[in-house]
Image (cartoon, rainbow, N blue to C red; front, side, top):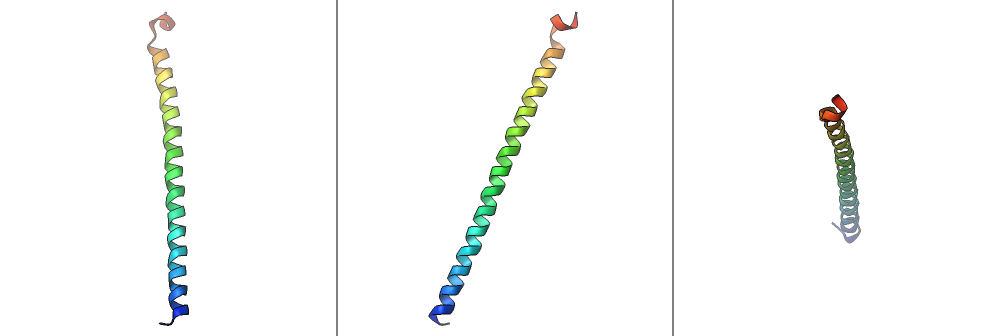
Length: 59
């Protein structure tokens, strides 16, 4: 393998690694966004349930 082929191989491997690294970071960001959205929904459900259990509102 001559020097040019070796450098081409290394460059290709680096590009592939960077691409997968970006995909992984995007997936982590998406997972974090979904967790935040789910937490907001859970908090809203908790407030709704708390209102339903409030004896002042039942009477």
